[in-house]
Image 1 (cartoon, rainbow, N blue to C red):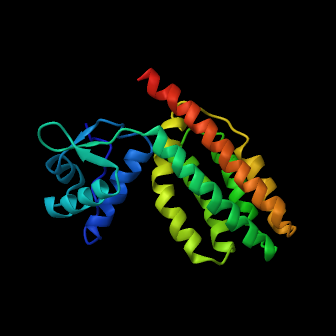
Image 2: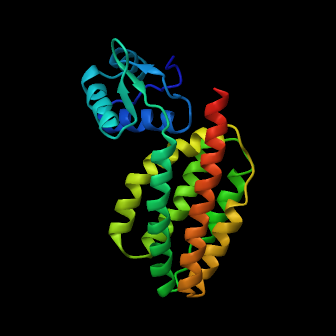
Length: 221
């Protein structure tokens, strides 16, 4: 059931490593909603003791990614469309503010991020697609020079990664990187209003598309 998890190398931060490995598996759909997980299974497959696994599972439960399963153990929580919709509302506001602040400084968002994003969008590597999208937006958060934006956005991205993973399992191809390019251009040109508007529109489109596609994914399960 959890055969996709890899053994961890010795002398590492086991709690964080287990947490990250499970979060990645939940986000990319390797561990779909309802999957039952136990300390014993994870500890055996990742070659670690139960204590760091217990701590990692507590963190995941606290973050809302796993919940108590009927009987013994835990299970991956179901995707909640209403909750995701609210997350995107907040993300749109944060992205708009970050783009506006970055445009004030006429920051240049690394073109390599967009080039890489276009390249991975032609493949079926879900984790790479999600990572590329996060990298682009993280660059804008950093360019805003307001550390509170990145800190706040991170809390939402860990959940957004999951819905993106669920949707990207069944859909390929997107104009997302054309939208990213337009945002980057507006920031570089110092057009604060356009950068903010494009960022909010980008989040709104993503919100509508992902929720629509997620509804289709959930209805087909």
